[in-house]
Image (tube, rainbow, N blue to C red; front, side, top):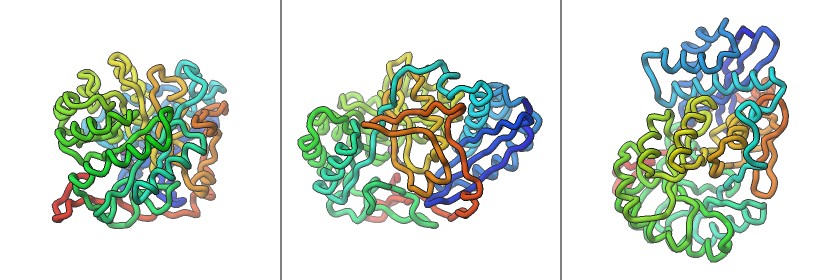
Length: 402
Ligand code: EZ4
Ligand code: CO
């Protein structure tokens, strides 16, 4: 089966998405997500200028060899733009292979390891009471695992908090809006938040929290320790992960489990954290870490060290990524949890899909392939709109990690 054509579809049904569609001489087509928040056109260009001319004429069944061609065969390796492009190609090819086999994708990966995929939802509020209310709303909707983020008193804006409690989209302006940060205020606030939240939801709901790269190692150790009584499922991205030695320090202070990896794009970013058992969950996902082919390698390495998966699943990852991720999650033996934020109705209409939510679990469908398609006519009605992620400054104006 030869690849005859490939096209990049950019659409903005509420937010920007980049999708690669691969066509074959047997009439089978497949799609893959290539969305990189705030850098959408860079990936689109990498696909159009470099990848697509190299894809035409290749055997669509040679998924591994095509992956190796674009990774090993390329002198300029790695990086989020390159790896998102490779991921889109890989996802589209797995979609085609599964359609050719007339099987849902999880069957090709090795079959079902579980009935459903436990997901966590995002509860957020401007203050503690608001957040507690949002957490209880998620519990009512059936979620077994809930991420809680709250505004910090005295700070005019904070990561993870939006006006609409069901949708959180940080890329909210053509040029970056500014968040404000004060570590002391945050460290005083976070334990109070989780004391109230834990008290309100009871012991059985898994609670998660995203620190979003804002602390130093010692501060992260202090926070993890102060959250221990509330038994978090994980604290996420306590420090920026360029310096992976930092995690050794954090581990000396706290047994609060740690999740890192949503901005990682290859196994090389993950390797030391996994092999030194410095994290408990690896957050890499299909679109930003080289597709199913590469994510499987990361998960297999993680399994050796009892590290489980906890893939990124915010709204900037399209339903195409979510569909593929759910097939992966249905198979992967060392599955931990899957992040899940609802897409808007407009987005769901552009990307019809067969996955379903029930009682805190998502279920991959049984349609051959990954079960997600794109309505290209509808997609064309939503032209690209520039949007960037915010930047973050300390209260004295110093640039900080967002
Ligand atoms: O900031 O997806 O855990 N989720 C997150 C997200 C990320 C966005 C970046 O595009 O950290 O909210
Ligand atoms: Co995160």
